[in-house]
Image (cartoon, rainbow, N blue to C red):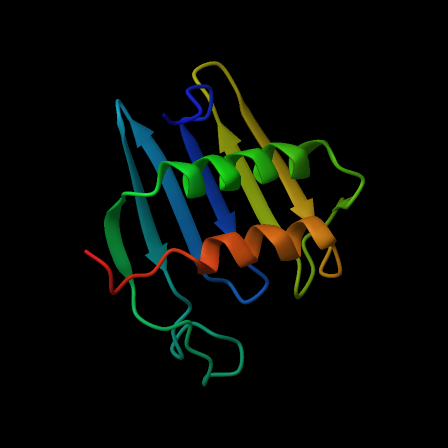
Length: 123
């Protein structure tokens, strides 16, 4: 069972790759939009291949939602987006909350570790 209060989690990592997780009814979906060499500041960096799929692991979605909610309230937040920092946006039925996570944040590291577990090669 998914955490019902979270409807959408959007996370932009320190390299500009974007993960968007949405909960629609009883289905969770993830969309990954990587940075491309054409849009990166170096002109070379690539975040890999984009993908969009249904998440089949309820517990992974819940772990991501829990750590994201913790990150919104943490002291690891900073006031301005700088290179390496992460932008987190969480929406529920009634609100939208945002946080910029410092590049050296342990919560940011844990969130990114969980997001990497979403394997685009699995059906």
